[in-house]
Length: 399
Image (cartoon, rainbow, N blue to C red; front, top):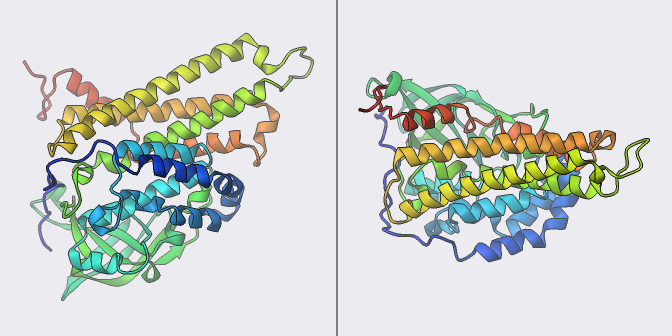
């Protein structure tokens, strides 16, 4: 095994535009396919993956290209624009937005970190679709010309339409944190075994099945050590926060759809034995006003921090950890607000909202599952709090 390579290094490109020139065109693309995505939302629940028509629409509009480096044919879209695109899709269907977000980010990760030889294979013909996961139950053995992987990994969103799959394994390395290094393997999707276990409460249409491999040989050029080293692309690939910042758009879009839907419903819905509509109730008026304010504030603060971090990276600099920690805490807060909004909207929707055809219950379930993601954690509050208290890395307050 080789020792763990350094984390992502600064880009060789000194500057990058703060907003991608394709922004308006990408948002127009979402508007063009909105009826397809809306129609497919219930199909996604039944099929437990991104439906064929929505997948084809995403492909035709080039939306999966957002995350990949321009040198490979991608759009290398700035993080703010990506948030806006994911948000627009999430207002139509949370699972579709999740599938797009993970698909765009996954191909971006491989495009920026895989070797030149691997990229020649991955990007050789049609635009690739990637899936993968780390932290599986796995082993790896060094052999001549590469590595042999065995293991099983869960939550591989989009794997049913993936063409390439990535996965990890750990190995002893006294120079790595905890005495373990991590290596990533990349293989054609046809080389892995799909485990049909995606029977879940929310984001059902994301197709996040498990997969396994058994003594699969992966040539060395299709492996890299984790944390990865940036080999191509601009500032977008400098820090890991950009890889999951799309969660802002995902949750903001899902929650906004719930507020819009419950407001429309409340204007006409009447409770039994009531003379007025649900909208006439002061409690509903107060609650929706409060939730709208909370959602807008959480979204705006998260986007402001993301914009500040992106502006620093666009100059070719690494943002301070304190600033990055504040962003992670803000995003965690937004996810919590989104769950609150969608659950409250579901409750105000009454008995009719419990039907699987109702978007209010689907939004609540999608938001709940999205908030379970590994990047959303109370630990981000703890880290941000330590910064506010003046703690240094060794665990003692400053001064």
